[in-house]
Length: 218
Image (cartoon, rainbow, N blue to C red; front, side, top):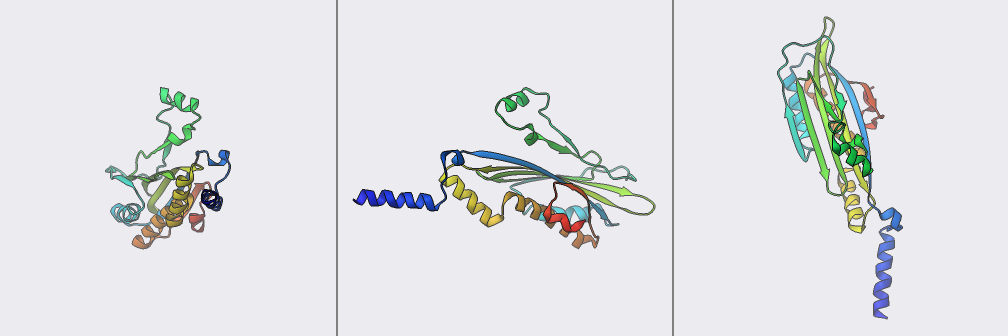
């Protein structure tokens, strides 16, 4: 009788934890990508903008890398990031396809002509791997000058799995938000820090998909 009571209690706990069918418990991986191009009309020096952005980004990153190339001349039109797949012509691309892995996960942003590039990686074991690249492109015309801040985010989120994995993800989401919420908060916080430091009013030029955290910038 005692063993039956223990078994019944265990079953109740599993049910309360929301353990679903075997199909639902399988590990699943979902990826999404987002980008935003933001105009910052200002006469502020690039170092002011970069310092403001880096202070925010370092607080969100598991790994943070930045580079400040020297710009010989400021163009009239700001540059723009370019996406490429470094594995496109390699054997790894074929192996990924055979394994059912989308090559979109391997897309990277390059920022030729940028005066600053930053690579932010945020990892939550069993939950998320977010890779974000930011590029700062200067421009100067007779009527205005400033910068375009380009942001490209590639997020891989996990779902399903066993009890421990699912509860771990639930706890992570409770503490720092879902992967999408985390991404939006990071981008919004970066823009707000730049605005506060420069006095500029940033404008979202374009973005895909719609980023609720930046919708107010349109």
